[in-house]
Amino acid sequence: MMSTAAALRAQLVDVDKSPAALESQMTPGSLKYPVLTLPNEITVEIFLHFVSLMRQVYYRRPQPYYGLLWLASVCQSWRAVTLSTCALWNDIVIVDCDGIRDVGQLLKVCLPRAGSLPLDLDIGLPEDNFSMDTIVSTLGLYGSQWRRIRLSSPGMPRIFPIDRFPSSLPLLECLTLSDLPVNDKPVSSLRHAPQLHELSLRNSSRTIQLGLPFNKLTKLDLSHFDIIELLAVLPYTLNLESLQLAIATKKTPVVPPSILLPHLHTFKCRGDRPTIVLQYLTLPALERLVLLYPSDAGVHPILSCVARSGSTIRTLDLIHLNFNAAYDFICSLPTIRNLCLSFRSWSLGDQDRFFAAMISGSCLPALESLTCKGCRPMRADNLSAVISARWRGVEGTTKLNSVSLDFDKEDSNTEFANSFDQLYELGRQGLKLEITGVGITR
Image: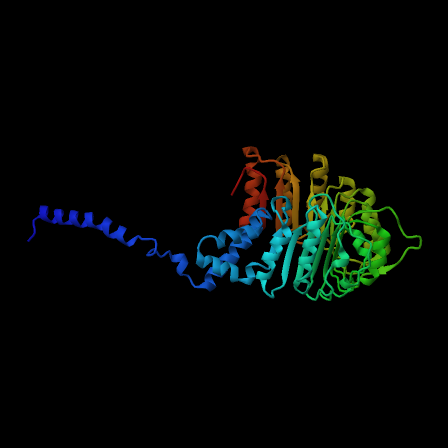
């Protein structure tokens, strides 16, 4: 039998030989990384997930095509997969024009790799007219594949040659033009966009005059628009479901029209002036209002439209309206089930009055979901009492089942800990609860 000392010496010899054996195997040609042995189908799924995350996390900067270039530069295998996978190239974002030498040439390289897939493009147009012409020409070659298109001018707006749009846009579903003044040349091609359902014109609303197809629109978003021009096209939008307006002219029709939009369920508005449009509309299906920065005067045409239309408002987002107007407005809509409310402009006394009405059941009897923005920690006890009462049930009211509270400032002061403990206890009992903006966590 080998002695203990001899056995140890033999083991040492084996250890000395091991590094040499490993080094002989570690030649560049012999290394096999597990990730490079994956089937192409799995590699493609990983790449698609990676590019999708870049869009979500970085939001345009760096643009997803940079990620594709990174993937293609790792090795020959990844390069082949990246360049041959059409699904990696049909959703392109190019908005940081200052960092790109030639947007037109970049599009010429990227777009062919999408094959015949529908194209989703977000293009920031440069300021010089020469580059604009190149980009428009390049995009025009692929008009039959446009699906969701956003064209914007991050810098000084240039006249956009909308008359050079492709003659046929059979797949176009969503079109957004942002900060793009258009020329006055007649346009007929855009009438041949049978799938166009969503249209957004932001600081480009003169385009509304140029023959766009409105008959199948379900969503219309206008900023800096002319009220008379809008009222001229709304009669043709009988399928409209969502209307979003911001910044309108003061001009109104001499002869007030009466327009019925039977399917419109959502009205979003920023400021007061766009609400003028509502005095000309009948909206029987209206059930959601999103109102940003309205004033006392702005809520009157809304309530008049609701009453005239026989609408039942189920959801209300009310951001930055003074307390008295907000309180009267909310009490005028007892059918509200979902409320998103900003407290930032309310005094502590205003908040107390609102909370008391909630506890008594005289306000928002149908409420099921409550979102509060701009809460203050010193009123956490009152909020807790309101939520507890409506969660456990107030006679004549619907049970509250979902609450989201956003506090203005982080505050870990233990003075409020009991109030938050009570709220979190309701969450453990089944209330759907989210609290943000405070230092107390659970």
